[in-house]
Figure 1: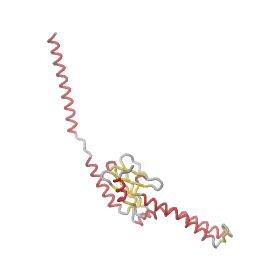
Figure 2: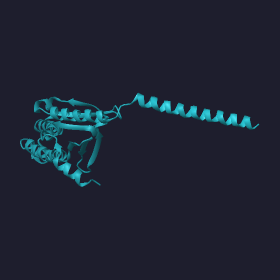
Figure 3: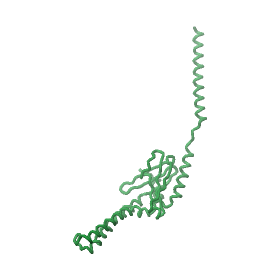
Figure 4: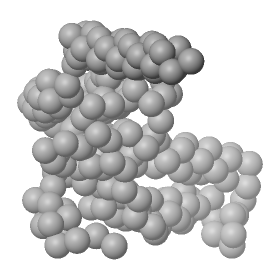
Length: 208
């Protein structure tokens, strides 16, 4: 269960740009438009009526259906936009997403290896980018670590890598002197044990 601090961070968290609604809606709506166009041309040239309407009215009826099916697509993408948040803590990158069920991904700064900035044609036109986070645990770049449609991606990536560098500096480096001292102490103990064994052997011989 999330604590109060997590809920406060959720309120202050960053969202993807609203242009994500356009980006994610373009492909399915384009497919619907192509279907509408094909069916409209087919009804005009090959059918006298379509669903009880004459060939002149059929394209308008089909366009109404196209508009009707476009509404849930846009609504779904809007809900995805509202529910996708991300923010940086002192030690982790948090990504939350989901419409039916909320999923929370925690990525420690110490495991982050790289951030891939990608732009398709539409993202270039709208001046946004998608960020994919690569971690040390796996070389795979999955959608779980994807932050789409980030408008101020340069400043966010800079802030993220600053925190990553701080996290790496906090990890204590290996100290060869410490290992040398441990080996030296172990040898001293072994030498002390050997000396005590020699003393016991001498005492045993004297008693004989």
